[in-house]
Image (cartoon, rainbow, N blue to C red):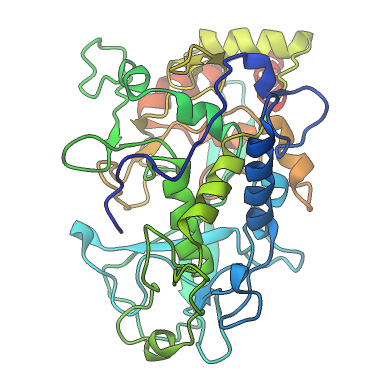
Length: 435
């Protein structure tokens, strides 16, 4: 990956007005509505970005040079395959198989390269290029018993691969699965300054509250602070969009100018490439188009949070038992917009139950970024199946299960949740479902 520099000369990301109401969608659950107050030029850029986010990409070479270059190895041919309506990715497809929105990532201890397969498995290939492998998923049942006697059966996923087309995996390869997240309020999260995030960091738990949020610096000079993905492995929406374009769709771009063909994948290396555009650019996804996608994603509205009486009670309980120590109810952007994403964008030790062996930057096996909770109310509405799963790998079938998987720094809050009377637990869950 190229060094991430000067975020970003290509991206005029935001309009200047700082009225928080212009970011709120009070009409419906849709996550793709533009913020209010865009100029004519900004509206045009928004539409261009939305178009490239939605259109199906095709194989190269093609007469449609603006959108050719798919593959040679890829998972999907459009962003909306994994983010329908900018929402959460499906866990299973209509046939009950693992969805393409649940991607498989590979790594090895000490950052060593994964022979033949690289960092992410591609489940599709072009005509002359074999796909890499197909994901598998089994599970182990974990029983949890509440103090009042209620029992809940959790499913701990066991990740695997089958139909490997490029040889066996090295014995020490770590396999994890990641579900495509809902793209909620990325613009506001991007507008939070590094200093605002860092003021909540307490890596050594100096205040002795049991919460040790730490930043994931993506460079040695500590200039690129990760704030997106499950382990805060992307510094910006532009950065994450480039990662997804390259890994999920096989699109070369300014940050990933080379096809991601691993050693031993000769057909991938020899596959046809797209023709240069009129400006001589040979990238599949050029800088202006990638910037337009980032602009689109950073200028969509967030759903209005409407709490009923039960939800308001649940919100108070959420704070009372300590959930809000990490899922912060308020953040402030650099231009003084206060908003409620319910995240601190920091890494936290989530315990051995969620540990997956994967290290990303400064994020260890047990460490994950606090997931933003706003938009939970949209999850079932944007999915075609209407069946949301929760957590980074879709292991939780309900929000209750998601809470019960919390450990490490969140163990105390989880135990306090379990000690609540059943009606209060339901109130807290109602609050989450109304975000």
